[in-house]
Image 1 (cartoon, chains in turn brown, green):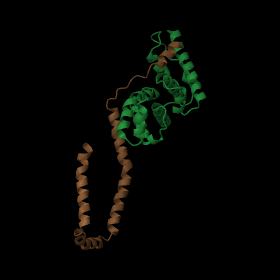
Image 2 (image 1 turned 90 degrees about the vertical axis):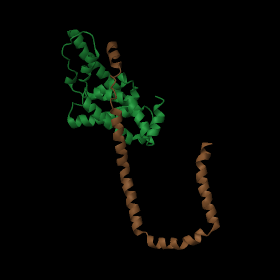
Image 3 (image 1 turned 180 degrees about the vertical axis):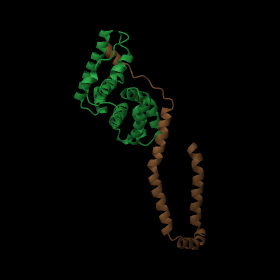
Image 4 (image 1 turned 90 degrees about the horizontal axis):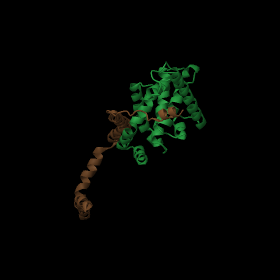
Amino acid sequence: MNELDDLLSHPVPAVADDGFSAHVMRRVRVAQIRAHWPTAVALLVCIVLLLVVTPLDAIGALFGAAVPHIAGLWALNLAAGLVVVSLLAVRPLSRM
Amino acid sequence: MDAIEPLARKAAAGDAAAFGVLVRINQSRLRGFLLRMTKGNSALADDLAQETFLDAFRKMAQFAGGSFFGWLCAIAYSKFLMEARKRRLEPLEEADEMAADLPEAETASLTRIDLERAMQRLVPAQRAALTLCFALGLSHQEAASALDLPLGTLKSHITRGRDALSRMLGYRQAAS
């Protein structure tokens, strides 16, 4: 039985990869896309429906009337300027 | 094997690159296991291995730790059994003629080729149990879990499989 146990204990012969792993990963990526596809379609349908029911004309007219007043507010201009400066400074600061 | 745990965690979180590393690490042993289960049918073994890895990726969140390779073998063995039933590849239950003697040997010494031929005459559960526990180094508990068998049944498959192999290969030695 010892000889038999020795033989049984030999590892199964190694199998060369030969592109097997790459092929599996290609199929994994396809499966991932398929898994996310229904979510993407549902999101798109929701956006389209939202655009259909949203009163864009009324919103546009409202903004058109409000913009000249907003542009004259110095506090708002200052806030917008600070946001721009902050965004520009984030990257150099993160490198320090 | 310590490297497997963090990779499995990342893969469970949807990291395909981490899963890719797991595939590369385990593909040879898994394909070797399936090659033995399919009696050397490399095309079928590779198909089953691919399906096993795809299923593993989908179910990664269900991996509860322990032996990742054992978990892969559980998926692979279940796929093999389904395919064997579908294609009627071989009887899945033990029959008297399964342990029939092999043709006369060309040499007196036991070789790996003799063993492979004798292994092909075992029922799948015995072949899987012996391969997982001896050639692939899984513990009895891990192998029982992989084959979805109670521990006692696994040990019984190992004992009966070894006895059958011993009879087959013993006859060959005596005959030559």
